Structures are given as C-alpha cells and as structure tokens.
Image 1 (spheres, rainbow, N blue to C red):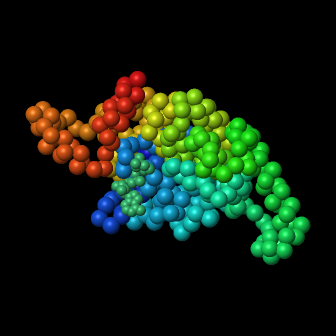
Image 2 (cartoon, rainbow, N blue to C red):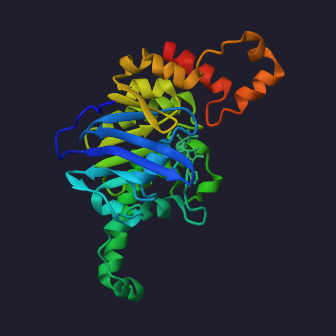
Image 3 (tube, helix red, strand yellow):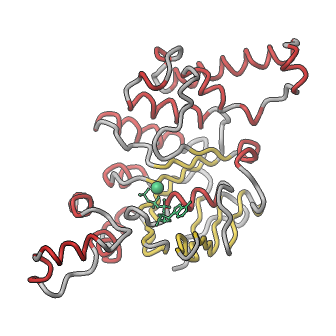
Amino acid sequence: MAPARADAGAGLQVRELTVHFGGLTALDQVSLDVAPHEVVGLIGPNGAGKTTLFNAITGFVRPARGTVSWEGRPLRRHRAHHLGRLGIARTLQGVGLWPGLTVLENVACGAQPFLHADLLSALTGTWRSSREERRVNEEAASVLAELGVSEWADRFPGSLPYGVQKRVALARALMGRPRLLLLDEPASGLSIADMEELSGRIRSLRDEMAVLLVEHHMDLVMATCDRIVVLNFGEVVAAGTPAEVRASPEVTAAYLGEPVADPVLAESPAGSAAADDRAPGPTAGAAKAWSDDVAG
Ligand SMILES: Nc1ncnc2c1ncn2[C@@H]1O[C@H](COP(=O)(O)OP(=O)(O)OP(=O)(O)O)[C@@H](O)[C@H]1O
Ligand SMILES: [Mg+2]
C-alpha cells in the first residue's frame, strides 16, 4: 500500500522497512510518513510489530532492508544516544524510569544528550557544569509543572501512582524539545480522565512537534490522530483518516481474524485451543473491546 506522502525531505519517512528476528519477520516492507506537526497513530494487534518499528527508527534494531529518513537525511548507523541531537525522543512501552533516581533527576536525564559540559568540568565541579546543571534542573522542574506533577519531584518513581509515572516518562521525553516524539502505549494503565487529558496534551504538542502514537485504546487514537496506520503480522494492512480506518474491513479482520467456517469446531474446546495457538494475535476480549470501539 502506498504511504501518504509528506513533503519531500520533511518529517519522517519510512520506506519498505524489513526486520527479521531469526526466522520471524517482525516487519515486512513497512512504509509510512509522519509530516511535521502531524499526529499519526500506529495500531495493530499484539505482536504486530509496532514496538519493533520504533526500535528500528531509533536504532535499537537494525533492519534487514529498507530506509528511514528524518528531515531529509537517511538514518543509517545511528544509535540511541544520537537521538537527542537529531530531535527525536521516545517513551518506552511500560514506564522505564530509573528507580534509584528522583522524579526530577529522571526528567533531568532527558537533557543528557544536549549537555555541553565536558567530563573534566563535570568531575571537578567547575562553573560550567554547575551552571548547566542548574539550568537543566530548572527546565526539568518547568516541564514537570507543565504536566501537573511538580509535587512529586523529590519522590522516587516506584512510590507513585502509575498515571504519575507515565507523565514523568513523558516529561523526560519532552526535555530535549524534540521535533519527533514516539509514544509507545502512553495510555496503558491510565484512568479515563487521565486518558482524556493525555489526548488533549498530545494534540497541543502537535504545535511544536510531530508525534507517532502507538496505542491500543481506540477512543484515544481516533480522537487524537490526524492519520492512522494499521499493522498486522508486520505488514501495513490499512492507512487513512480515523474515519477511513474505522470503516476498513482489513482492520476488523486484523483484530477479529477471518470468520471461522465451522461453528462446531469454533465452539469445541479443541477449536478454542487451535484459535489460541494462532500467535501473535489479540485476546478475544481485547478484540471484542476494539471491535466495539471501532464500531463506535
Ligand atoms: N528482540 C526480539 N527478539 C525476537 N523476537 C522479537 C524481538 N522483539 C520483538 N520480537 C517479536 O516480533 C514480533 C513483533 O513484536 P513487537 O513487540 O514489535 O509487537 P507490538 O506490535 O509492539 O506488540 P504489543 O502490542 O504486544 O506491544 C513479535 O512476534 C515479537 O515476539
Ligand atoms: Mg509493543
């Protein structure tokens, strides 16, 4: 399927990206674009390859084939520590905060790729590193305030409600003022109210950056994204506006599977076991919830 095109040289362009893990093809010729200031949703059942795509874009895994370009430049041998300077940030599926650092320190770590102080001045505590440290801490405090979690700044993440931890993880990603933000399931574990707040926040981040959003909560994806790309078994099976994706039979098939021809087989214990063996795929409950969401 042809990806919707961003202006040549602008934003993120993924072309025919293929990733293998041993005999498993986790991504199979995936192409997609994220234009500047666009929010693109990346959805698909468990194991579809969403996190793998983030890992390939950010240099954690090497593709077998295909290209990733960012702001007109191919990203080839980049590594995670280059991302800050490229203007790319991500949050991890889960939370991924350092348990032994306070909330403020965790967020300050997000600025690490941008620091100018050299190792010697940091070790000797000379004016240059201490001034920089003060500036970073002030910025971390201000991002925490923006996200409404200042009161937790001196606490350790493990002692905080999950919704607060997720906001702290987002704050850390925002520290470098990225131009591309990759969010991997930012709403998992959040209350409905927190999800609504998150949706509004992502929409407003759009003024400053492009966002690629992986999420299973379809209400959030539909309300937040300009466009949606659907992966299944490592392939793009649909792409379009939220309304187009909502109406796509390929999307329903990806989540619910093909109709089962033999109802007796489908209802028998052996039939259920066979269905459960079709990994990777969503649980029946998740598929039903998604289908209900999509049907609106
Ligand atoms: N490092 C790895 N080594 C081997 N297999 C992997 C690795 N990472 C992912 N996979 C496999 O690649 C496939 C895609 O996984 P991925 O984590 O990208 O899916 P996902 O769409 O993010 O799923 P979920 O919604 O459950 O997070 C799965 O079959 C997974 O088991
Ligand atoms: Mg994932």
